[in-house]
Image (cartoon, rainbow, N blue to C red; front, side, top):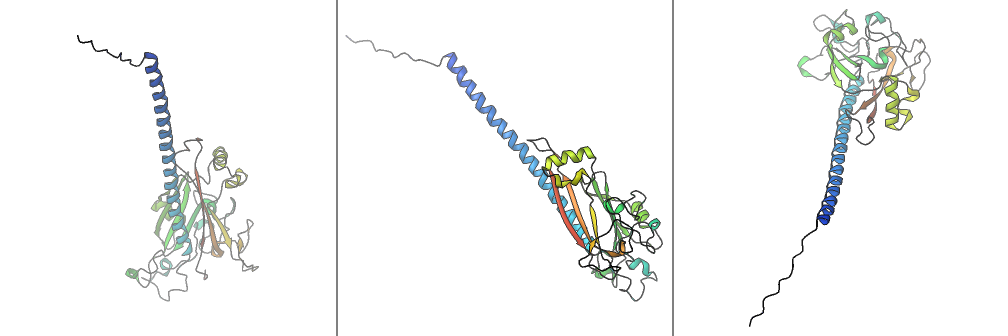
Length: 289
């Protein structure tokens, strides 16, 4: 006689166990996706900050190069004219604002902290956020020996975009009018040096550093150090805010550049803007102006 085989009962998961496992799975999955999303947003923010930093660095380097060459070649450089017009091939001044300000005969006063007589049609104090450099940008170019035509190179902050334009110098013309008519193109985006007061307060919080905008005031893009032949000082001092025979474009020796750029997207964690502040110095090499 054969005994019937005994069957072991098979137990499955209960509904409660299934729901508990599903709940744990959803919690873990949600946490993982939240962390992934946060990481992606942070990565995008850091990428935008890096891109802003690189753009600002390239812009700063170009401005420094242009300022280093300001005032070249001086009037003593060429003995004979090119095409009978020396004016277009010599830099009369290292920095040229408007004819109304006296260019090139009567030196104007450099705007410091919002003042000055070196004006343009669009900015009453161009020294802070609007500069016109007079120079030959390609002095070693053999294609136009013995000299290339001098250019007016202009940097102007329009809203939050730093614009740049270059055009040939034209005898008898106003540098302000000529550069404006030639047109300026976007050079560095999201420049916030001259943002409204409300935004400046937000930027100070974002930077966690009140010195970024001292006193909550706009920060000039360009600040100047002048030679002082009437009362020699060594080293050169910041150009004085009051009228002075030394406080003119011909006496500018150094231009300190401060570029504050905001990333296009705010920080993913705090929601505040991310700022990049760069500083550079252009030193006019030509001492004969």
